[in-house]
Length: 382
Length: 154
Image (cartoon, rainbow over all chains, first blue to last red):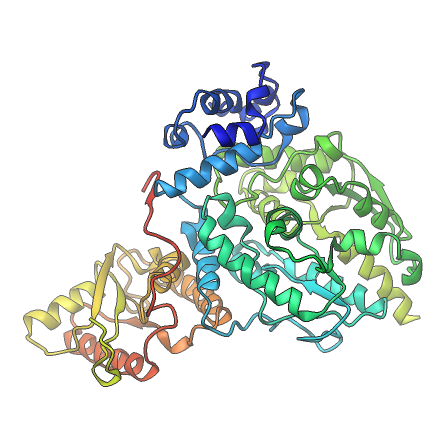
């Protein structure tokens, strides 16, 4: 515990309480206090003592870390605490009955040939083994199969990204051997499950001989860039988000106006506060003719997250945050809420399912790549 | 339990049964003294509509070689439409199971009424035979990397 407190700079805490006052969950009304956890860690209390004090309530959105005047890594502390709690055999009560965690663990176990590429259409050029770009699909095909109740189309973003890569003359590797990146197992504390996935994935990409690894998922990106770091060999491909990959190549895409769209952008917590990628998705959207980007009052580093990043917490507070966020998006007058992480889309769409206020808060949601790919269509039809 | 000799391998099957029809159907098979294969563990739920993907996936994760989901015949559900919900859940589960590369024959949906003791025995025998032919589940031979954790609230 002492090591963890030192590593996350918890000892620097001077008890100002900015973390608690900035926490979106607290602002939604939960009895929860990041500050109390930092103090508990400094006092050397075991992780198990925090379990019933909201260990799995934290959204890990890093809002508090961004505000902390002494740079305490509260999110890192929560990660460490969840890992020790897991070692003491405590897990959160996972939403969806733990179906998604089971899926990840089945993948971690391996031993079967996944059938995960059924969504690839003929017009998309991909290669299962060789290429300059390795396109990391993430688990969007599983999400679309699982969230059939509320019309989730995260695969559209995946297809759009491949289409854009094709338009740049790349035939990306899309591997049937890919497994879940393990992000969500890591964040409920399951280090062992995470590591077996990590080893498989790093090995897969390293052996492919690709030069760049591109993904559309903000969580996969965070996992690859930060959590896989200790496993990654020296000559490993560069790891980029699709928006980072495309942002400086938009001229080559020869985009033309499809229709006038007012779009607002939801910063995924993983892409924004975790990795500092704020500008590229915006540059990408602005490069599309006919797209007008309007910002929500809380954007960039202040953006409110979708309240469900790690599949470990979904409660009335999360719902409140989502509803608030959707109202904010609607108030901008935008036609479409654009995001760069499939989970933002899933969770905000789920909130739109509300039978009472669904109408008031509904807004079309799309992945940034979809908007760009649409501007390609126009060119093709000319 | 499983032994190394392939011929004497017995599968481990998880059967989800609804309280009102399938579970009672198993009971009928019992009181009627109908002989059937014994290699399954039965989990009773109030309604087949309760059997969400998580239940089935957890069973596979923990090493089940096959999973049978059973409920009342369509139109006979104790809760009117619970088994229609069960179909939706089952289809969703099946698509994920297939995506994971688990043979689809390892998962089955059957309607068994409380009077159909003989049919229960027949389904169990047939399904056990099918799983026997498929052999052990890829997740069955070693325990999954997840250890059995106590949930915070359940």
